[in-house]
Image (cartoon, rainbow, N blue to C red; front, top):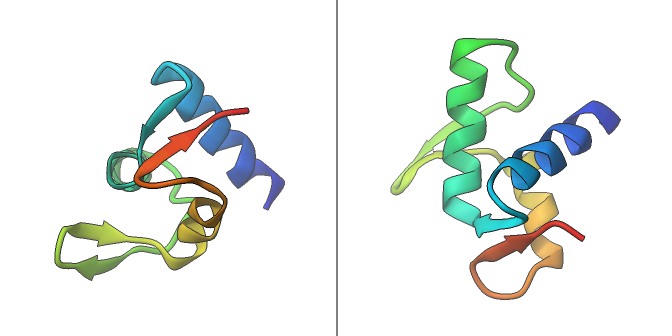
Length: 68
């Protein structure tokens, strides 16, 4: 679980410290397709969706995820 969290923070850092929730989900899905999959994704109406990754979104305001 700690590796997953580090991955998300590293991805956010590469994106300038903040991004939209949907974009973060899509980038994590693409990373898993090219390498080691960290999250399980299911099909959803806006693309791939990870329930375990959505847990990190519950602490954000609106549609933007911030790295603190």
